[in-house]
Length: 353
Image (cartoon, rainbow, N blue to C red; front, side, top):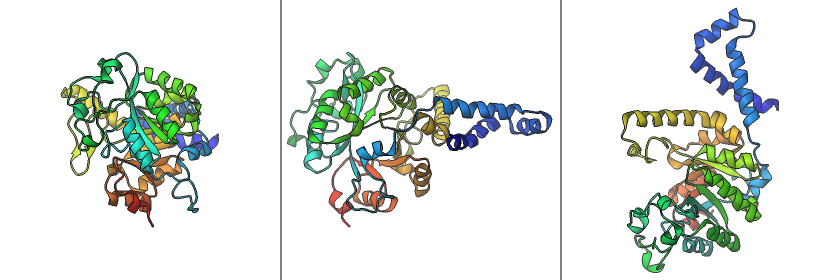
């Protein structure tokens, strides 16, 4: 009990110094029997400790993704090195059953896919808010019923569309049944910051208990992960992170920040403050409060130091999205981490010694 509490003290002191004021905090040490700053620090520490969700045991994580590449010296150990991002969306229409089958045939039995809700509350496997990028349609997924969505072809803009023919959006149940039947493991990425998604995931694990040893639930939204794990702490979860996640549409090197999510001055800077607080709290409090087992980090904010810092917290690091053979080799051979990729091209050379 003492060791996890001690980990929270530095971050708690930083909060007190930032909001209470260094001068007043130090002055009270010499003028008060019990400084108010110490009391505030203690309240923060024990508040986080009391609200935290315990991390699943390491063997539960290893059942899904295997041994850590750093700690394993046995070449026969089960180790997941590659995860097909959206079912390797450059090789087949992303987040589709045909893509997941293609991964299985190609020897990649670990896939990541996205989950969102339709207007009639059906959880479907799709990434974007609209079909514009995939099907050249401005249909909004959250405002359209599944009866209409299932008749739309999401392969029409894929460069290899002639190989696949009509491809529709699968439901979450169809996807899970397919992957479990194939013996494939999965990362279920919750795209909606919607409280309904919590009950969707909990119900899914109730109906398919094999998911406890075959799936990781992930999201960019800490609140979604917290309420899922608060209700069922046996579910292995991860948090996805990239710089400027709230204020900007994307971040990538060397371009940097993408377009603003809001053109309103006050709203944009409110989102920037949210980004700052989220980035600061994640390695100090958030990971501990959620009890996450994995952190999915954007490849352009990775460094050996960052990976080591997360490993000392007992959290595995995965990198996304890694597509070139050179980047794949660097991830596995040098950084010793699992990566998510949009294409299975170069996999043989990446993992050959």
